[in-house]
Image 1: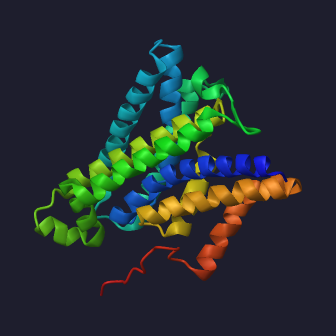
Image 2: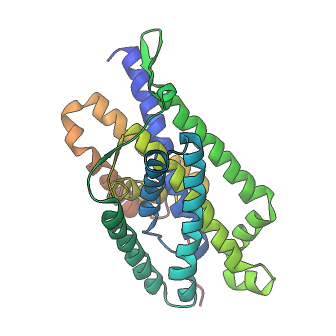
Image 3: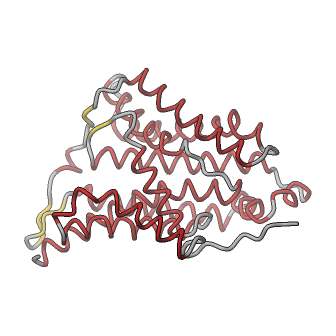
Length: 297
């Protein structure tokens, strides 16, 4: 493999890892606060891409405005999902909320099939993102650089909210002890709704960038990326934002590089993620940065 090809594969792995990281953050934020795996997250990811598609093709909204509107709408949808499907089960056993999450996932996916139809849709890509740049023999799509840069900015914004604002302080307090947070006057339901909104907005942004990179829309397009992002969150330590980022980047790197160095294994690229999940669960169930949860008695 030449140096130019290696650099191209490296950039592709950073791009893919950034997308996994953005989705994984949504999983890990919700789990960190509610100990809930939000299976509907992959459908939120899918809806972000579809809303941009319909905004551009049906309502002829300029692409940048369609992106912003899509992220805002999906953020509100995430808050609505929490309000309707999860908040009434706040005091119920965790298995009830988990089953509710699976139900919401199927509901959103099948609703999308009915309204959007299962026909694959081509995605509009702005020309400035699709014209290759050649630097010393390395062909790079601007999209390959745009995705990691946007992902980095979104992650920095999230870290500012979590570690520099009162809402972030509330999130961290709830993640430690939700009952004590109630007693201390933390607006728990409002903070949880905000968490769902932020996580959904990040998933929408990731879905939009995923659709630009793999320009085809389908109602089931979120399933595999969602599973892989969940694996990334588990690998990094579910409940840890930094762990989700590391997990996403590592998973993207492994997936791209194995196929680059061993092209004959390309058909098994999805299997590597699940092998990684099994290995993590066997040898380090808390992940790289996850903290061991002690049961209260």
